[in-house]
Structure formats: structure tokens, C-alpha cells
Image 1: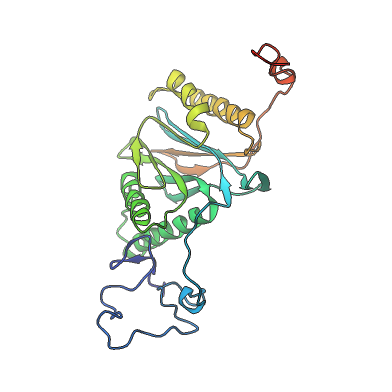
Image 2: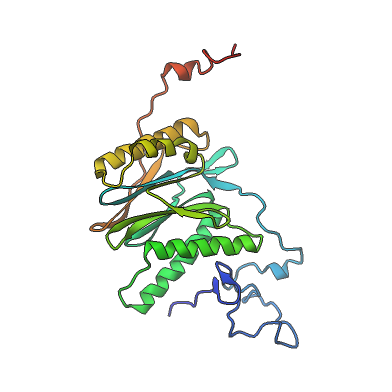
Length: 284
């Protein structure tokens, strides 16, 4: 039997572990429930560390530690493309070089993230629980990209209101009713939809390319060429990036697929790379 989800508490809101409304809490009991070795008071899964048993004040994440950089995504004639590198950076150290930052939700939706990797892993757990509920219902209905996007907006805003935000910028891409869908959700619940979305440094580096060259009826070949150019620019200009990428594709006919890791051909013999400040005012 599949376990009951524990991170969708009706009492505390989406994305927060805790008791259901049907479970008596300290508000209605004469004596608050005592923590045990196997059932944490937070409502988390058995054998998790219970913050109530540590004795110290509970602390929230004040600053992300292992982070991913930019995510880029565009619409094209047959669907959407979402791409990013595979680096999990520990500060400025390129520590983890095989971190997959694109997650397949179902056959018509993917989610990619920049920011804190562990928070994105928590978001994946939430989405997997929703997907498991769809599977157990066995009615042939899957979450649409718009539903995933709306759910993540509520999760991020709910955590922000608890002063314990998930330090991520999320990109939701998919196909709904034969129409491509792209949306971005920020760490405090800000969100928008567009024909091209980016996170992190790509907002300054890749977005101008997309404004100039992207259009919704472009071919898959042109869309891939544009994605490669955007990823190249991000790698050239962003120090927290590596030449190891993945691209997810979602189409109406073929469904969802995530590519194997690949590298792009780079050039470092440009004259301006050798002498970047040669003609700059005040340069040596």
C-alpha cells in the first residue's frame, strides 16, 4: 500500500508538513502529544529528525548554500524547450557537476529550478506526491501545466508567509490542450507566463536574444539553435556555470523527454577575451 502523503497538510497549507485537520492537536488536547523516536511532531516521515527533540530554537534557511544558476525556456511551433546546466555550486566552488535541475512531472509537464538544490528536492517530493495521487485515482487524468504552475505559486507564497521561503526560481513548461505553456514562479510567489522565460543571470544575458529571435511558430531546429546560443552566452559570462547541459522537450505528440548531458563547442580565442579592457576608458 502506498503511504499517505505527509507534506500536504490541510491545517498548515501546501508545501508544509504537519497534521491533518482530523488529527487532534495540542489545541484540543489536555496535554500536547509527546515526540517519539518514530513519529516526529512535525508530521514528517518516520525516522526524520524531529526539531522539537533537538532542544535548540528552530532556525530557517537564511542563505542558500548549494545552488544552481540560470534556467532558460522558450515556446516553439510544436511545444516548449527548457534548458540549464548541471552544476550545483557550493558558493563559488563548482562542487557538484552532475546535478539534474529538470524534473519530469508527467507526460505533459516539466519543472526546472535555479537556486537552492535541497529546496528543489523538497519541491520534487511535493510534486511526486501529487503524481502518486493521480496514479492511485486511476482515472487517466494527469495534472496540467497550468495546474502545476498554480500549485507551485501557492506553495512558494505560503512558505514566504511563514518566513521560511524555498530559495528557488521555478520554470514550468508543458503542453495543455495542444497549446504550449510556459510560466515562472519566484521564491516569494511572484509569477508570470510568457513565450520565453528565464531565471537568474539569464534574465540579463539570454532574454535579449529571445526577444530578438523567438516567435511561437518557429521550427524545432531554429528553437534548438536559439537555445544553444543562449546557453553559450550564459556559460561565457556566468562564472557559476559549466559546459554540461540538459534540454527538456515537451510536445503534444511525443510527450516529455529530457536529453542526456551534452557539451557545446566553445571558443576562447576571441581578441576581446585576450584583452577585455583594451579600449575601455581608464584601462591600463
